[in-house]
Length: 512
Image (tube, one colour):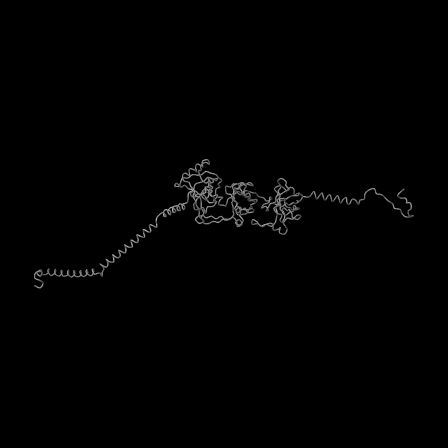
């Protein structure tokens, strides 16, 4: 039966529905299909354009928040922190971040990350903007090196980023002084760089300080350039009076390093990572550097107050080394304590030295001729002591004890100590004198003398009573003298009478 023929039992005159079966699907079904394709494309595009995921290990997650904290390079967002979790050992924090598409070429082993937040250190204030925007992860990308996806974040922001033009140099010194990361580097009192690292060498013998000098000032660093610690004040006393020198007020507060190149310091710029010595101050750059050092140990039996590491070792007033160590230890022989003093002699300061293999014999000969170490007064005001080497021909015989770790050089007491010993011996001798017996004898002698004196006084009184002006003897004598005078006058008159009239001697005075 045809579909257009009226069905049996239908209404008379009513139109009969015509059923037309389509052979193709409806176009409506294209809408979800297109939507699915678009969604898949978007998903594929999103996945394809998604950047790499990296893992950063930090000491602390302070200020970081998953889904909000950005990873930035020069204030451009290059990633987003997706997860913040503790490390398995609970010692650090692990941060997983999703970087933007195309960041793969910057993720190398040398790429550095750190947390940017408000900091005050090294005389500098940084990250104040994060007080309002919140902390973020800073990035210092590099273009060379093997690819990497796991990084160890820096504890503090780097002083210099990898895109900063300039060169780094390595300085070696025996102590870091007040130089720290971020301390300025000066060239003729103009800041041209910073200290980027300061650490103790694994050998423990010296400190390695890494500095960065910005372009174009890095061209001023030559092979003969001298670096010195510019911290504090350099005070010198010369013929023109007291001279005080410093590079800047900032170097007084936070320390710093300065450099200069002498006239014969070379003409070509030094290559990056060149190693230079770091002098203690500018005056030290004028002194020659001595690399050969010979150590000896000295034992003093007196107070060493004023003797510290760094105190000079002199030979007749000329510096030839310095004191390295002063300590107190128990004498292994059980005789109490002893004070070993380790000194360091720089043989290069001495001219016409014998060959190294002959120096032992030369030192033995010098000690045999009286070479001794002695403490001396270096400064009367501060009481600083120095170790003085000199020949003492009258010193008792001695020899160098060649032992490990350092040979022992014989010492002699100081002049003050010799005077003290002499006074001690004198006191001991005086103690042997019987002053009590002598005193008793003296008291007896004085009593006898006192008695004799009394007797003498009595004798003098008797004598005075006998021959004094009012004594009877004296009056008799006076009377006798008067009579004798009268008699003498009478004899004179008689002699005159006889001279004038000799007959009067026979006939008397009255006959004429």
